Image (cartoon, rainbow, N blue to C red):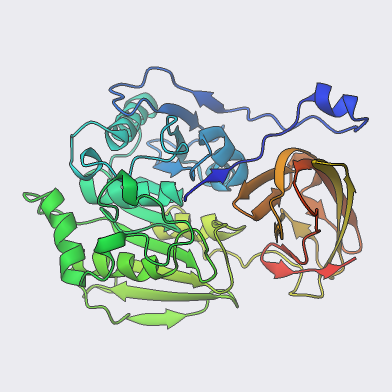
Length: 425
């Protein structure tokens, strides 16, 4: 199932009792909850990030969390807030209510109908609030999200093409994939769309067109991401999304171009007659259910048109030889703490890092210090905090966490830093 449990930073009292010293977490200075933003049939919460250097008539980006998460956690674990600081746009972070493991509603009959009164309508209310409150540009409203949030990205684009101009869906499924709540069990299922899997592009496109039968304007441009080793939302769903959105845009299924922006990425583009990219799909070789990784949000906002430059490649180190990770656990019957040290063995500084690993057992992170740690199934991500984001050549940074386990507490066998494999220390 789409059950993502985001790790929670431990309290000072708990860590002090364990004898662990840590620096205070960085404050989210401009992340603000908006309690009364308008109609809210989905009973969602709204947080908004307005950068200090917000642009006049700013673009608005809605960034939606995976199952088990919430808006503030997605703000911490993704890079959209930092990119807003650089480019002056406003970010809305919705939080799902406590239904179906805190996932956004992508299964009910109402979730497939415009104006039917569910999570989609609440998110549209948030967008309208941001337009009024921050004088947001109605022609630059975009949606993005991870897993359940990616599914909602597709839904908003399908139901409100007059509001959303483009979307970036990380590990999603096509709009109206799930016929009902009982079918919303994609974890470990090679065909989570159940009876809907295997529809033709025309059939997928017709589902979107039926949701807006009188709409004649341009459809949102769509960027679609998926990892080939995703064991929660099947990689096969990427093709279903491609089929749906290329058909909606009146394009064939053969890409206009194919390239490799990064060594492990394969990007396909479908352009219209004016050479505008309408659909873009990026396959990430070997990646599991842990997107977006570091650097991917930059490609998303570039696709939206919110940057004026080509995004840089992920920061060093180089694959396999540029980093070393030392992992030292201290275990007891049902729990453990771990000290993790990252050494940059490359020749260039690492500026902003995300360390990723896969648990071999049922380990579950419960708190962390000197890093923001999130977890999706067996896959964990640790992201730097403000004071330790730079690792100079030959320098080391460290962080730690507490976790629970049952049975044998086997250590992870491999780590990647910003998508590159690290040597074991």
